[in-house]
Amino acid sequence: MSATHAPGTPKAPSHADPLDGPTTDTKPRRVALPESPLSKLPVMNVKARLGAAKFVTDAHEFQHITVDPDICETCPHTMCINACPAKCFEFVSGRMQFTYEDCVECGTCDIVCTPGSVKWNNPRASFGVNYRYG
Amino acid sequence: MTQSPFQCIVVGGGFAGCSAAIRLAQKGVKVLLVERGDEGGAKNLSGGILWGNDLARVLPDWKATAPIERPVSNKKVGFLGEKGSSFVIDYADPALKTDTVGYAVLRARTDKWLLEQVKKAGATVIAGVNVEGLHKSNGRVVGVIQGGEVTTADVVIVADGANSRLTLQGDLRHGERKLDMDHYALGVKEVLKLPKATLEERFGCGTDGGMAAEFVLGRSDGVLAGGFLYTNNDTLSLGVVINLPSMKNQGELTTHDVVEQFRLHPYIQSLVKGAELVEYGAHLVPEGGYQAFSELYADGVLVAGDAAGFCFSNGIVIQGMNYAVRSGICAAYAVVHAIAKKDFSAVTLQQYERLLEKDGILGDFREFKSVSKVLWNPRMFQKYPDFLAAIFRNLLKAEGPKRKMKHHVFSAMKDAGLSKKDLAMDGLAAGMNL
Image (cartoon, rainbow over all chains, first blue to last red; front, side, top):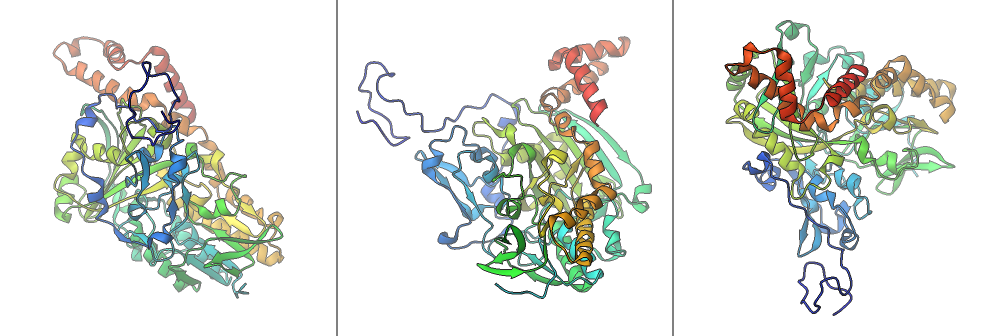
């Protein structure tokens, strides 16, 4: 059995005791929510909501926030997923994926990112969100 | 490096930056205001009530020309239980339509207008330019960096908002490289369109009044959040202010879900029924108060508005825009003072702090410096909404009126899991700090 494996890929059971071999606590845990009356409500999709604001998207090489997925793998809380109001952070096949195009530039991810994965800058002039109401 | 003709550069076209630039121009100072939105207000968002009349200090006729939505003539404060209960204090007063206390505003509109007023006052305005940093020479701020180029000025006023990149880049946060989660809440907001006639009938506010409502949101999952609903001319501002640390370990729950769940509470749902979403956005709320201010001044630089942390909360109101106006004006006077002395060192710019004291801003924040402990008390969100509902539910039952009130309170305490000690402690804390 190899000492490392990509998070999210299932391991073949090669030991009688699951505690044998290296520990791989790199993938942040997602705990199930306690049952709440609120969790049953029919919540609207955030991407549909974001469509209401006007965005001017900059080219990929100029994206204003960068995220280092290797650092994310060491994160004990991945609070960015919970805190980002535009759902820009998400795990895809065990890797953190960040969608800068939907960002409303609030700065929350920078505040909650304690391991230092998020690098935050304002978008270049003329790019990003343009509120019509505000 | 460009030797600019400007004595002062103001970064940020919100209420703080615009108020500072207008007062400086009125005092004959050569001032440049730089705003990163293509148009004034494009990047700006707030819950939506501008309290007070502070803008009149720089723009005496602002009420006649500003694109304000509605005056607040009805204020509601309440608790919304997670199982659908509501307990709301509803204060309506036609006197508030003429003797106004606050106006609902939409920042993309007001700030566009405000930036026009800055130009009219004689300041130079450049919009659509992102200032990347403060330029320092021998530890002193001597200008701003934009597109890798430096534009100089005697003094810079930083008013770049709650998510202030410049105070971080310019080392104006007591050595911190990141804003502190404990000092910021997240505001998430939806703007919902509702025909004007429907809105006025539903909220009973007439053509010349409006409603501002704030709620404690009952949640057993540990998320601490307040909700707000404001009436604009033909839209509603609906949103939540969420304590960020309380979003930790919340499984799949996101802040977007929190605002949606607020909108779907029966009390709110009935008020926003049929309204169509026209915008969704979010903004940080610097509600850390007195302990959370940035450095207010240093050699060649002043910090005003949300960037400095001048956002005031006492549990009944959250006020940011009026403190932005007031601190912007204080910063302008500090610059005028420094120009007269021909010295822009921190020693001279300390005048800013004296002006903030004289204006009463620092006093307000000192008075309420422990308020966030009371407001973000988890019991407020986890216990009290159900506690209040239980008292009244019991009282309304057939046997209710025959028993003394204290019986209902004790019974409701049991239902909500509140101890006598909790109640005494919270009552005392509220009495001391609110």
